[in-house]
Length: 327
Ligand SMILES: NC(=O)c1ccc[n+]([C@@H]2O[C@H](COP(=O)([O-])OP(=O)(O)OC[C@H]3O[C@@H](n4cnc5c(N)ncnc54)[C@H](O)[C@@H]3O)[C@@H](O)[C@H]2O)c1
Image (cartoon, helix red, strand yellow):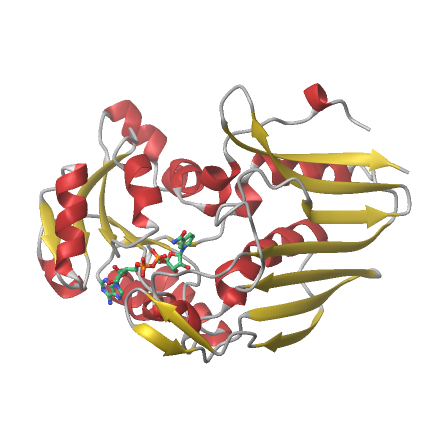
């Protein structure tokens, strides 16, 4: 087994994979020529739409980035855009995308709205010639997602969708171990992600919401990235809690799954299992800080590999570490 000092001790996993900072600072911004932009002192003029919970993870990173100038904010609840505007010193705020597009010029849209709003907003921005980074999903069906991608290609602009777990150093570590056949012949993988469910917004529980597009998607991305695209999929979904109380709408009916199990056949005999849910007791909270169980595990004929988070005593923050154990 690797000694802890041999393992990749990396940046806060939440910031590098679940949230935007690293993605925007690496993949998306690199593709937009951000390194050149930094050299020339030009920052990418960026507009952010959706000023709710996750904007609190994006805005501190983007407003400090040398690659980005956040020029405008937008939210259909205009007070949210104004509040974040005051907090992060962003002068231009708008109540809808049309006003935003007609207002302060920008080239790159970061879409942090409800899951159900993404397709329409992403399409509108791409049509207007903006590059788009979208929180997951980029649209609510495969066909709609492919349509959004085709539109970006036709317009000659870039489109990225969260999650970006495949950009994380942990993913690189695991991919390398697999490529070097350190686990022998890979047979199976398991991944899980869950908590007690978001308390702030109803859309997570409404049509086209659910634990799978909100949480399961991270592990679906990681495992298809590591083991190859799914050749076939079987799933079972259920609703455990049919009614909830959320901050924006009060008492609501839950109409999308809050409990999902997905099996994927990756070919070559490799089968994986992803589970997600909004009814998982999780003392480690939404970002899983301090979680010690392996939330991703992969097993082969010659070894076992797992991904776990631990609190780093030196920095009082969370690291995620991937390690492998030989059989
Ligand atoms: N909250 C998190 O920790 C987190 C983490 C990772 C990813 N995400 C993803 O980020 C997205 C947003 O989640 P959230 O938790 O921030 O939700 P939220 O409800 O807190 O915020 C969404 C915001 O978008 C605004 N909005 C909705 N439709 C709009 C429209 N048409 N035009 C302009 N503004 C609009 C809402 O008024 C709201 O302020 C979702 O796709 C979610 O899956 C959230």
